[in-house]
Image (cartoon, rainbow, N blue to C red; front, side, top):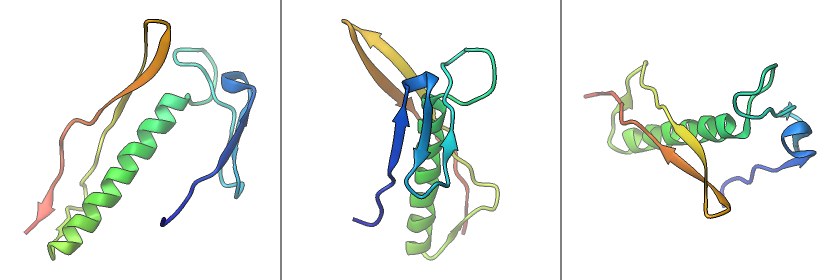
Length: 100
């Protein structure tokens, strides 16, 4: 194991979330709700795409190349419901650049 991120949330989307090291301290919101705050699906998408870019950087380094300075990654996370159960769907539109 390389790293474990730890958070604690109280009150769900109407509460607060904080990381064990205190670097993250937010009040989540519901998707489409008015007001400030981000929702868990946005945070999941940001983490997913950031992790993917990190993996692409490692892969590029192993290939003795590097990612282009403006390389980016996008992720879309859907909150879904079917049959009384909730689940997430993630899409990652492909886009990357490498310098050869």
